[in-house]
Image (cartoon, rainbow, N blue to C red):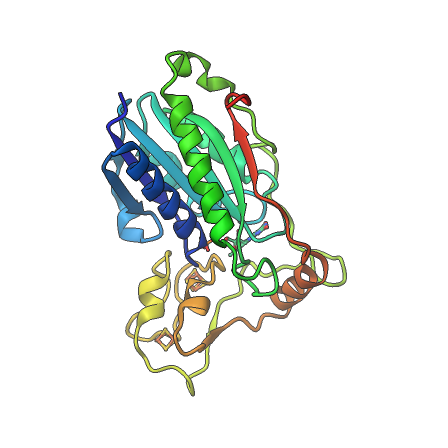
Length: 279
Ligand SMILES: Cc1cc2nc3c(=O)[nH]c(=O)nc-3n(C[C@H](O)[C@H](O)[C@H](O)COP(=O)(O)O)c2cc1C
Ligand code: SF4
Ligand code: SF4
């Protein structure tokens, strides 16, 4: 008997959080169950270990990075979350290019961690790199679809045959496929692995928010122009700075963004996959 809803998300620019939070609240209310949320974006929260049992229903939501799960977060997803025949719903978001293999990878991670996913979904969201792709998404309709998706997953998990059948969930993509290689406008690989955000000191008020927001704790709070750790290009600092003072000027990165803006403006649909189709 499921007795609580647990929602976990990694969400540097907030889209994934919005979808997962709204869906989790909806299902908790519909089912009259308590809701527990964990923001896996914060490094501190990723240092702890989280264990779940068969009475929990877990919603795990992660954005697509380079066609898969964010590679620097993957070890935490694998090591810090432990299920025990725990029913789950898998959600990925993507910025209107493609979710490629991220949902398949998330399902694989969940299964290996002891969870039993009854469904997986990929949601189109505004791209962290640019407002030109899927601007304003998730919108009301996306949020409604997310609630409907999680409720269906929850109801599937109540079926008495669920645990026996749960290994059978199939989604689009290949969990073991390589990462997507970003291209520039010339069609060649755009190499920006080492790029880091710059700061416009004419705009910066030294409020320190960017250092707080960085999921890698890579921005020095004593000197926010100093990005000493790993930068995963998540754009939490760029999109979250209230003064618009953070920016990337790496040529290869900007060429990749221009390529995305040229080729991926036609809005895609959200995609849903369930253990059983007749629901
Ligand atoms: C480093 C990075 C890589 C990304 N790679 C992809 C991708 O391969 N395909 C895609 O459609 N969107 C991609 N996106 C867009 C994100 O998946 C999208 O903006 C997502 O909603 C971000 O989630 P958040 O708002 O919860 O941080 C990428 C974004 C970042 C920051
Ligand atoms: S969030 Fe923006 S204004 Fe605040 S310290 Fe960072 S760069 Fe400066
Ligand atoms: S410094 Fe890099 S990793 Fe940190 S918030 Fe900014 S873009 Fe993300």
